[in-house]
Image (cartoon, rainbow, N blue to C red; front, top):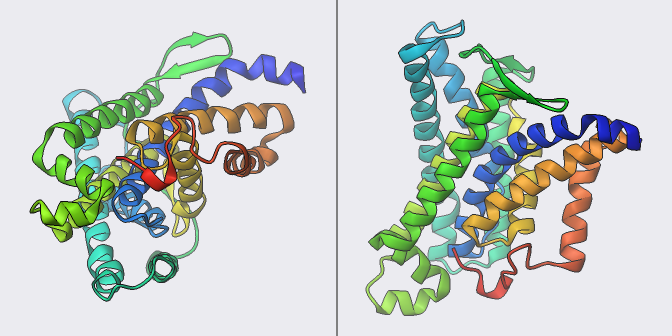
Length: 312
């Protein structure tokens, strides 16, 4: 086992960072909603799933079924990303208006909101299972996956670099947005003390709506990158990935934007290292063992966030 690990170390590292970047993008959506509402939006995984179908639909609509290059490639990537962001962002806003806001207006418990989230998740899964079928669907390859250079046994490909760089840039942009803009200050104020935020003139409904929209946009970007890297989708493609993204959010310190990406990258590395040691059939077991261990020994996550005083 150890020989396999040492031989596959660099390939596991590169693939782990790539997978972890996608986890981190989805985890940022979880952490934003939790920071504002103290709600784990388990339907967020289906927001991601809808983004993958939207990216596939855009490629099908424009008849793109082969790798592109140059400006054409840039255009196709932008098309996939914008369509996936629009679909996922719109879905997140619709969920907030239909599944969560009525409960919040009635003063329902967080348990009721959690049950609503789980119900919305299964509802969206079954809608797409009926509409698109239950089999995996292939997403056309839009870019040639060129190996730029090797690090040991690991191949540094252009698509892997794209995923990792895009996740880091989005995290930096979101962090700056939350810390420097008026809306970002409203999000932070609502996360810290919603009652005081209302007294200071913050429109809670507007803040919550924008929080869901931003989280959906992040899931849409993750969906587009997932389509480029994995080139497949399915009605339940978000289920397992969503749980891993939630694990990443907890690992990094739920309620912390930077922690979400760090948690995603760390989780991606751990599960790939575990797979190289114990075998790929143990990959998911390793990932969820991390969740159990974190909750047992460091429930505040890597960055040490207090779950009762989570900050975005």
